[in-house]
Length: 269
Image (cartoon, rainbow, N blue to C red; front, side, top):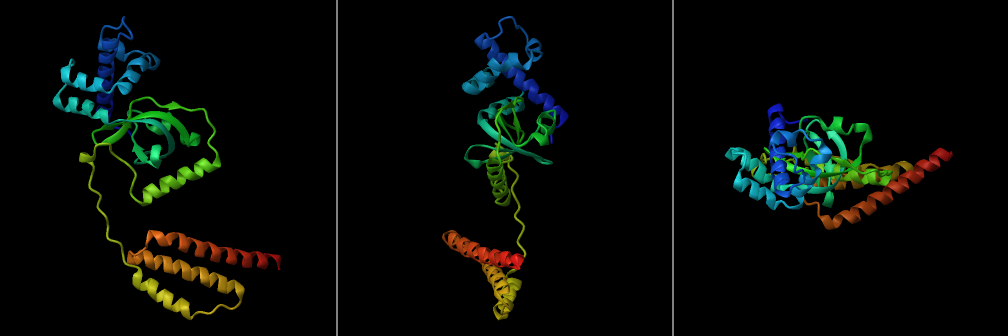
């Protein structure tokens, strides 16, 4: 997903104007005397001004206050909000229709939009996950990056991949994927009422209690099924206490191992 064409153009115009201002203040390229000259510089020659902005974000305040480019109030507000940037190393995990998933410090998951080019063209899906150094920015309620992704040449093993996928799954299930860095523009999330499965679960439990297994394999399978039903009922009733989780996990793991043992014995036969 990318910004609207006019928004992508606006972003780069505002970013290059801010960087040109910083360039002029710091004299990085003394031979550059106009915004157009700066905008046409290759990326590597913009790095000094770009890095200076994120190392000294007070420059954003000064630029907004002086407004040397006679920006509108709406444009100044966009630039001012860039002080809410998030800079760091991220794992770019996957590309989705609604945005690309970045996993950052604290296992925070961000949904990031491309600017003028889709992020799956910048870093293709087959190369993911990949670790990148990035600056995430607010832009009209969405999250974008500042136009530059710097990759790390590191191998990401199966353990890291598994942890990243787990982090993403938890964030998705708990509705914790960050889609904006501007809380005031966040769209209120409407929680659909859950369809109550409690009556059916209790009915199943009553039936299961009456069923007796015919042999060790069935007994092991039924024990595991009953434990899973208990878990489902606790969740449906809303009294799933966090301090009980470990105990329930141990019981389910124990029952699962017993069932696996019986299946192994069946294979041996």
